[in-house]
Length: 401
Image 1 (tube, rainbow, N blue to C red):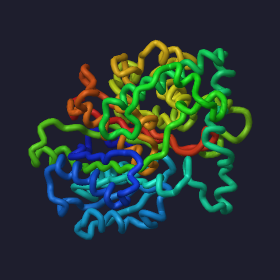
Image 2 (image 1 turned 135 degrees about the vertical axis):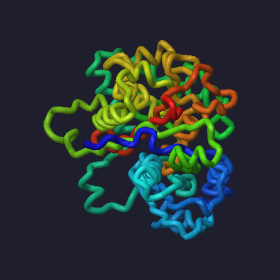
Image 3 (image 1 turned 90 degrees about the vertical axis):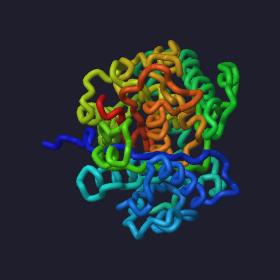
C-alpha cells in the first residue's frame, strides 16, 4: 500500500508575479519575475536545479507547446523541463511533478512554475479551443457562468435554501475576498466592495451576478522544492514541508445514472479524503488553519467548504454568513483575495495559492498575516465543469506539524 509523501519534500523558495492586465509584459517576463523571487528566497544558484515543470493551460500562442520557453527564460542549465496541463489544476500538476521527483530521489532540487497570458487572447473568459472529437465527447458545453449557475440551483434544491439567503451568502464570499485583496499589492483587483454593490450588480447567469465571477488576468507563480535534509544543509531553519498532494479526475460517474444530483463536486470529496489521509489529518474542521480554494465563482467556494469537510453538509452558506471564513474568522479562506481578486491565469493559479499559504506559515504575509499560528494550510483547485472535472488538493505545514 502507498504511504504517501508526507514530510519527504520541503519548499526551499517561492515567488509570485503581480497579477493583472500585464499588456506590456510577455510570458517570459512574468516567468522571470516569479522565478527571481523564488530563487532569491531559496538562496541557491540556478545551476542547482535538476528538473523543472511548466504549467500552461491555454496560452500555447505566447508560451508554445513545450517546456523550452521556461528553459530559455530562466537560463536553466539544460535541465529537463516538462510542460503539463490539467485544466485549472495545471499549476498544482506542475508542483506535483516537482514534488514527486524529489520524493522519489530522481532530483535533489526541482522547480515548478505556472504562467498564463490570458489578456492577450482578447477573450472575456477562457478561450475557446478548436473543436475535435475529444472536445465534443467530454461534453463541456455552454458558458462557465451558466454551468456553475446550475450548481447553485442544484445546491438550493438539495438543501432547501431560500434563494435570497444563498445570494446573500454568495455576496458575503465576494465582499470578504475583496476586503482581503485590498491588502495585497500583487492582486489584480484591490478595491473593497459592499453587500449592496454585489446584490445590485448586473446578472450574468442567475443567481450569479457580476461580482460572483472571477476575472481574467495575466500572472505567474513559482516553487522550488528539495528534501528537508538538503534544505537544512542550505541553512533553512524554518522548514515548510509538503504534507499531502492529491489529484482526482472524473471517470464519467457524474454523467451516468442518478447518483449525482449536481449540488457538489465528487472529485473534490475524493481528493480531500486522500489528502487528509496522507497528511494524517483526522478532523479537518479543527486541524486546518487556512484555506485557498478555487473560487472561480462565489458558489464554488461555498460548496467547496462542504466538500472539504470543513462545513457540515447543507450548512456551508450559514458558515459563510457567520463569518467563519473571514480573515479574522475561525478558518480564513482566500486571505490573499483569491481568484476573485487575482483573476485566473490558469497555469499560475494553483501555485499562487500555495505561495500565499507558504507566506502565512512563515509569518511573511505582511498586512494580511493571520495572527494565529498556521499549522496546516490547504489549497484546492478545480478544473472543468461541475459534471466533469479535476480536483487538486495541496496541504503544506511546518516540518514539525
